[in-house]
Image 1 (cartoon, rainbow over the protein chains, first blue to last red):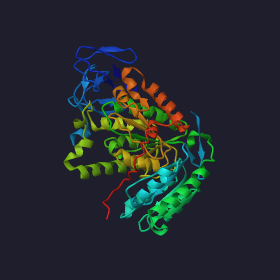
Image 2: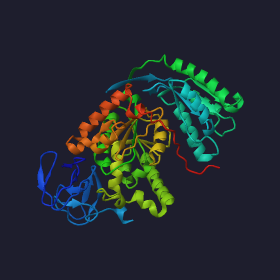
Image 3: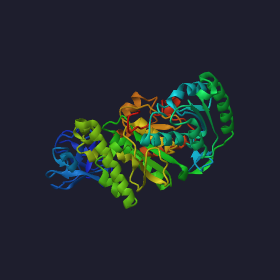
Image 4: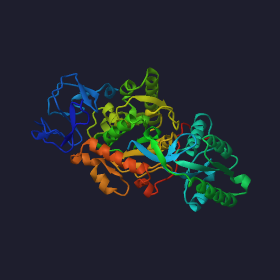
Length: 87
Length: 386
């Protein structure tokens, strides 16, 4: 139900809508709980990410955590900032 | 697929098709080109809308594109049809194509005495050219003689999750086997300059990557004004995109993770093998013409909304980003990367891509070929005509 595009990634992409409290199932069988709703094609954190830490997808930083992001939390513009987005 | 079977050309390139191209030097010759190509089996018309009323950069771009399409590895011989008073003269185009060593003929409508006479003569010459190239046989060749172009068109939220990363794994494999892969669509690289520069083989290439992407961003801002955020901001293309880097990384994922060996201009043939970036726009039909002219024998094309377009002398393999699209446009789609959403791995899809690619290279038709999705050659322009 989620896909990890690159092994370096600290976020996975939801392949279907995941409700808050539902179990997130990784391709390798790993499981954890979704902290909040993760709509399909959106990202969910695979680990805790400290404020200012890089959010990694495609093996590259796509921005940094605007505040602490917990494992299982949806990652989007509300908690991720990028230099480009500020312009 | 450590080898493939293709047609050896005098310039050392290897074709995976053996077409006779009928190439107008100017748009005014398209009608005669059509009359010839419709009567001679084995010919392919390369209709386009240019050849005159241009100078400077656009003239250079268009001459190079048309000449390189005439020299294309998948083309065994070329018949150029001109009008007589245009800027890109048939004679000059034919002589440039002839430098590749392959058979080339040309005709001018004005000096031959009109459309019908030119078409009749053209038919006779085209039949001779088809007969001569048909004697060529496929021979075993190495992947180092293979150039694969990458495109995406009509992308959706899943293009960057299923189709593009699968193509990226296939691209990395092709590069590791000594092949050449061309990644283009500079508008879709905006925001990733620092990442692509880091992947460049040396500081000079890194500088070229940086200038290409900053020019693309400046152009997008100039052309689109307040609408520039349509291509250089993530919010309005939501589907979960949280930053411009994320959106662009999804596009450039097609190129894989190899070292960037060279940045080439539009329609320029790469001098080195490996991963090459081309300075061509995001508009897929125009960037495909550039990639084809650069000598790509085949194009891998990912699509989410469903784009059926092919290219006259180059097989275009369509990779659907979702099963829904694959089913909805099954006639046009070669591969379903949407199977990732049902549990297949990106690696499994990349293996499927390489297997379809091997078949198409050896002569099996891609869906776009079966559907005769040849259309016209759309050339990139940087200025209005005069």
